[in-house]
Image (tube, rainbow, N blue to C red; front, side, top):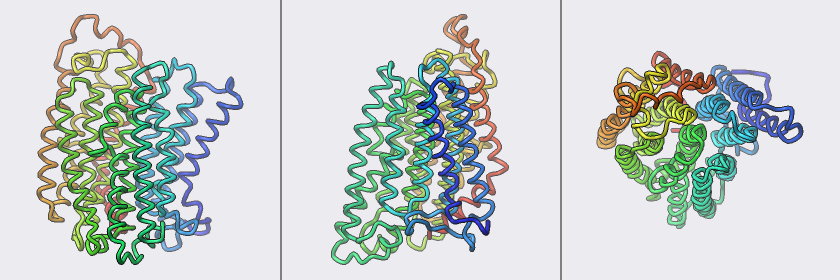
Length: 500
């Protein structure tokens, strides 16, 4: 607990990200000749790491509340608690990795400066989303994340695939935003408030139907942001067409931002008891979404021939796993906090291993070796360290022991079983077995397959130092999470349990 500091200090991580983005934009606008790709990457990464340090400091010190609890600001529209800080740590970590890797990826881009400020602004929106305690703030923060994301996907303006992906992403995103906003308006019409706690305590006599429709439409908005079925179809197109660092950013940080909305809004605004009594069973809806999303994502990934597209579909499968965090909740469930905390821990692990995998793809694009599994054949002969890191990512994503992905899935499935959802945990385990097939194809291509010709690997003379550093750091973080997984899962479970 940090006494004597103003309550607004609790927003320090978001403020650091916002000022970093403004500084980058200001220098790029006022003195374009004074900035360089390197200086922009360094400032952006330093700002992200500073936000991460502030997040860790606030978490370790118990925040700035006198009793160590949540800090409420701006007429209760903002709520800073351990849940918000946990997710902010994910956002800041992924942002730092992406900005470092982008230094080499955009080394020959005519104007890479805007990229760094757009990523930082999107991260600011995610940090604001984590502390949102009002549906109005949730919507504004979602748009703060979405608008820079549309531009980032279409950032390679000379690349037709990138522009087309950005346009599709924008159109689907605009539609989902409208659906989400309409859902918020119906919830407001039924409850008369936008503050989550007030919605939960409002009388909805005779308006349960209106509330139910509003909740369903809000679930649709969350499904889009987390790339869950039936709003998943934008993800493979956007991830494939976007620059690889952007794909890493969207599939890890942006996806986690969608889950913080699901975790906080649905448990605080529509408590389990109220939802059951009003016949607004959003838990059942999420259970169906989780089952369909993980199954469709994994089976679709298994038939892909391009590594980047396979990772896009596998990220849909992982969204299904994380949805168990809200799908396996029950009234008076003995493991409600445990299952949601396990889902949060999985998102943290996923942030490192999935970002690292996409950054390896970025490195392959930098080398110009192609996108298919066959194009990756024999890469380990010329890049053994990076290929080892990629093998760590693949095995961890598949959930093989002793990697961190195994423990995050194990705790998640075990918590679901403890809460009475054996079928959901079983389905998750079956899907993990399916995922082992396509993840192992990447490892096989890297280490066991022969290149098509003796000159196929000649392009791998360039050593993109920053990209290498980001990939290796992500791999090390994935491995180091093993000894630190105890404190991670304890912190996540404590943060989640505070919601019930």
